[in-house]
Image (cartoon, rainbow, N blue to C red; front, side, top):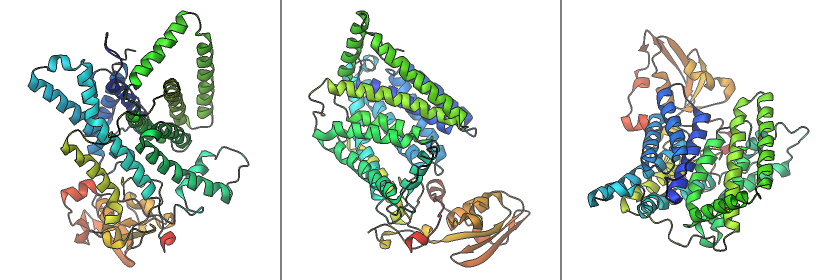
Length: 478
């Protein structure tokens, strides 16, 4: 594997490209879709190409462009971290392309792809905004958790995740103390990581805590997609390392090569063999218990071991491990402020009465629907739209789109999503439902609707970007 073109030393752009390629491979393994088979195949192939040629700026631009296209096509049915990654990919693609455009105008494009100074400029063109974006993501991960449900040991999503993680541990009883510990540790770790990363002298500690915390989240046999989320975060966390981090890695590799040449690499060989053996046993065990997808988690643990080993080795050999710049969050160009603005607005959507899906509110227990909220202090008067207050409860239906909302599920949905699902082309079906407590019946015969309001069109923007999470219960906010 060639990390850099011949004769050029390791740089930050190359390392980020390598980590982005790995993150994309994990994402494709977790979310490979038959519906977008061609695009997903291209994403996987270009990620492999970038993995073996991370020094290629062209491959970086192609991969991020494909990821932006994929993310746009998935909206509004996109998960939280994929939406976040799409914004970051757009930032990287435009920033690197703009630096190349500036070089083209200067007539120096030919040598800019391998020029160390220009490659540093490319990295610095997007890294400050990406760092700010990550802090915004952590902010909303904490801010949305400031609700009664999250801190309730009976309903908290942190407890539910813990149950999945320890399901294979026999005779383990999750008492109230363990539940409370899971809730508060999640809250304090996520908030602590964001604070530590913002402070120059605690940044290294923040990186170490983030590595450990997201590894713990990922080792969950029922939430394999966490591998995609954590690998994406690790690629952005790299941007918080010191500027001389690539030089330190090069020195580390040179030291290892020197020891190996002197015949002192036997210990490293034995350690590597033991680690590989343990991971192979874990992979076989994952397949044996009937969840072959957990092999992805085993691969992620291997990736984590590589990152953690390199990070700890580099930081242990350097006294000055904090980034020398205290202004690492300031955008290079003023138009880049649109990225944090978009991300902050996206996170505020639930409180504005807009969408509740992909608003950085996964596993937070936040409820803002039905004219009520379980948040500690966010007021209802902030709502600029009433999509969340127009709720539907399915009573009976023969339409497969509404099966998961059957009465036994206890799920509600917004009327906006009810229109979206009912508008799909089924020749004949019926739905008995309650809309804001009022019983109604929708019948469709030969594509003719007895209630034309269901087909009332929404704007292109609303249809494209608005989506709402199913409401499991309103009891916890009453």
